[in-house]
Length: 491
Image (cartoon, rainbow, N blue to C red; front, side, top):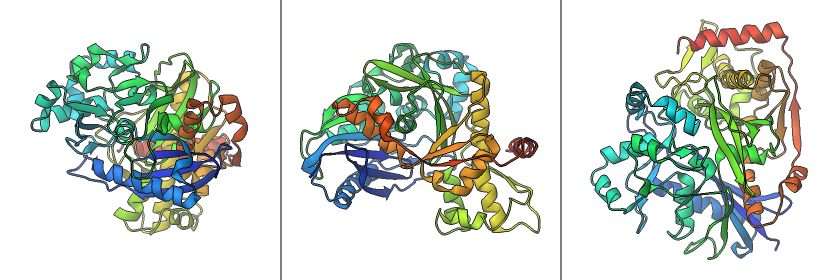
C-alpha cells in the first residue's frame, strides 16, 4: 500500500480527516459534527472531549474509506479553527473549562475596558489585530477570572493554554508536545509580528502569564510524534500545522504576493499574500502571519466575516426553511432575484471592516409577496455582499483592486452563491477541483516538513475546476452594493 499523509481539519462545526497521497490525490475522507454549546446569548463553547472524539472518529473512518493501513501513514497534518481557546492540566490533560469558541462575544466588556485605557494602538501595531472578543488573549483572561481554582494552578505552572492545534498536538503526542505554529500564535493578541515570539508587555496588559504559552514553531517541520493512540502507531511525525485560513491560502497555492482566496466555512475569510513585508491596514483589515516555511515568513492581510455557512445552518436549524444545506441553492434558484429582500449576516456581530460586536442580523425589504425562496436567496446574497466589503477594503489598502478571487470551503460548492459573488465583485471567481483546501494546505505543509515536496512542485499539482465570470453591469453592481450598505446601517 502506498504511503499517505493523514490531514486533520478541525473546524468550528465538524472535524474532517483526509487521506492524501503523494500526488495530492484524496483517497479517503470522513467528517463528524461537533456539538455547539450556547450557555447564554452571544456565548459559544465546545466540549474538548467532543473535539477529540470527533477527531478520533474522523481519522479512523477516513482511513477505513481509503482502505489503507495506519502503519503506512508517514505524517500527520493539522489545520484548525484558530482563536478558539482551551486550557488543560499539563499532567493528565484534564480540560479546565469548555473551549471558548472564536465566535463567542463574552469578553466584549473587557475589550471595551482595554480600548478605554488606550491600549488598542499598541496591540494593532505589534499584533496586527484589533481589540475584539474574536481573539484568544481576552478569552484566557476570562477563564482566569471566572473558573474556580484555575488561577492558583496557573501560578503553580500546572496549566497549559492552546488554540485547537495545540490541544490536538498534545493529545496526538501522548501529552508530550506543547506547541503551536506562527499562524495560530498570530491570532492570540499575544504574539509580536516582528519577533514571532510572545510579547511580554502585551501579555502583562492582558493579565496572561507566559508560563501558560506553547512553544511557537514554523508551520512546516516536526512538532512531535504520535504516542499512545488507538488509531495510529507510535512515532509518526506531526509535521504540518497552520490555522485554517492560512492553511487554505497555502492549499490554494497562493504563494505569490497579491494572490488571494476566500474560504466559505462557518464564517467567510479573505486572505491576501503580502510576502515578507508586514502590511498595515487603514481600512479595518487584520495583519496576520500566513506561514513560516524554510526559514521565510509570509504575511497576509485578512478580512473576517463571522457568519457565512452558519447562515445556511440557521436557515435549516433555526427557521426550518431547508432540510439540508445543498437545498439552499435549489430553493433560491426558484426565483430570479431576492425580490428586494436584503439580509445582513450579523448573527454574531460584524467583523471586518466594521468591527461591531453589538451588531445583529437584519432582514429588510419584506412584503406580502416575499417567499421562502426570496429569503433563502437573500441569505446567500448576504454572504457574498459581506465578502465584497472585505474585497473593497483590501483594494483600498493595497491601492488597486484584486483581479480574481480563488474560493474554497463547503459553501463554495453552491454555484448560485459563487456566480453572485462574481457578479457583485465584478471579477472572475476561481474554484479549485478540491475545495477542501484547508485540509489540503495542512497536508502540503506536512509533506514539506518531512521533505516530500517543495513549493514549486505543489503549484504544478493543483488545478482549477470552474471559473465564474461576472454578468452584472457596473450600474447594477453599484446599486446592489448600495442597497446592502443601507441595510448594514440598520444592523
